[in-house]
Length: 258
Image 1: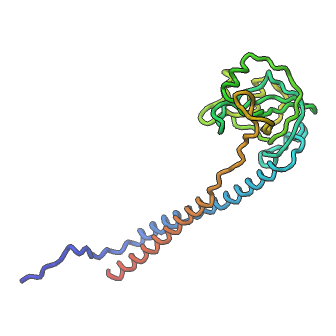
Image 2: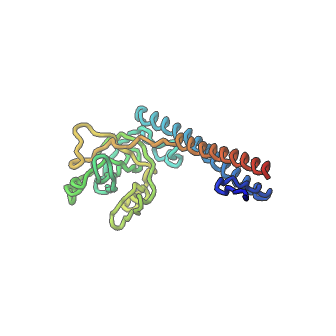
Image 3: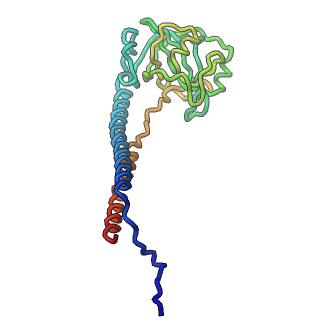
């Protein structure tokens, strides 16, 4: 009686791969591993940068207020060396040249009120007096407000790009989505304008964005997920090494059987 061969065991030996195939697969694995390690290392550097930024902002924002940079200092100001300093300035508010920039805050959807402050020492700085709701804008329509002397304290902020999220500023239509200082200055006929604006502190008393600008809403929290991202990239790199180990083991086994 002829012997019966069981072909369902699935234990068919695999032929070893060619040297060319092994070289190609090795190069691909090495490139993937190096790329994942580079991404992980980049996130480690980003983590250090973010922690330094948070520490810097915290120290600047809670330091005693200093005079706002004058015209002689303006050319040297950058986000790295100036943003979030606590400053104060004195001058005259020009209410007839203020600009409303669309914004969304914890108080709802409305506007930042950007009002030029003509400085006592010369030059002009735009002041974000705070957030208002559409009701305030309707109430102010057509109301003339004469210039007024003021002293402002708050956080120094550098100007924003010329567009908001998916929307561009339209000076001709008086539609503003970002605090683009040069564009606002040109639209309002302002000259000698500082390259920064001041986010005004909260005023005393109850805050009602329907009746007056509400200051002190600067967001000082920054997302910091870089450690998680770094761990993820390094874990994927480790998985590549495990995959290479399993592949090499199976290849050796195939060669022994062959």
